[in-house]
Amino acid sequence: MHMCVKYNITVHVPYSSPDSQSLDSDRYCIVGADLRDPSMLEEKLRKFQLDTQLPTLLVAECVLVYMSPEQSSHLIKWAASTFNTAMFISYEQVNMADRFGQIMIENLQRRHCILAGVEFCRSLESQKDRFLSCGWNKVEALDMMSVYSKLPAEDVERHVASFFSILHDTLQDIQASL
Image 1 (cartoon, one colour):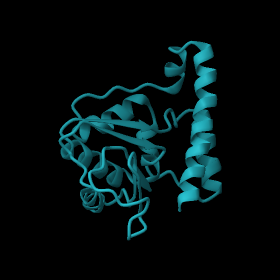
Image 2 (cartoon, helix red, strand yellow; image 1 turned 60 degrees about the vertical axis):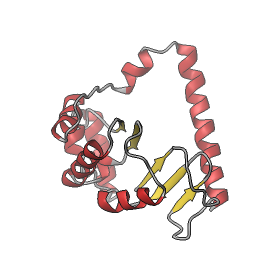
Image 3 (cartoon, one colour; image 1 turned 45 degrees about the vertical axis):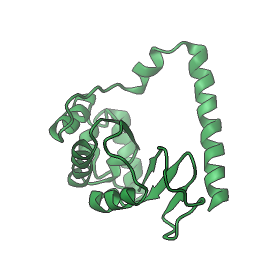
Image 4 (tube, helix red, strand yellow; image 1 turned 120 degrees about the vertical axis):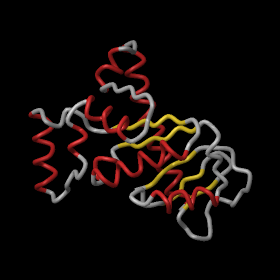
């Protein structure tokens, strides 16, 4: 599990660090870390002089669901207590108790892939409750259909195509630099 942090870097290490667990440029720092161990993550972030007093955006895309409830709660609590001003965007499965969700879980189980944190993915309310119980003061939760319904149709089509293009290019850049 990895964390990507974007910030202004005051010390530049050209493109990779000696520990081979990070990728560093003038715009991004990608740090390899086990998110189940927030103290190790914090130690690695300190090496890159991350200022926890600056407003910080944390993004977890289909990460927390693979962690045990205890592990993900520990990470979420750490983030709530570490950063002075932060926003945590968690892009996770939701409504996993419905038929589609059950089929997904069964399909993954047949492949020996267990979603250890699926209990928090039962509903938007369970996602909200998880963050509130871990120290976040305010929590908003939307499903993707709600997000897409608020956008003009042409924007959705353009943004989806653009997103996949950017994702493809980014992955190629990262792979080429390793």
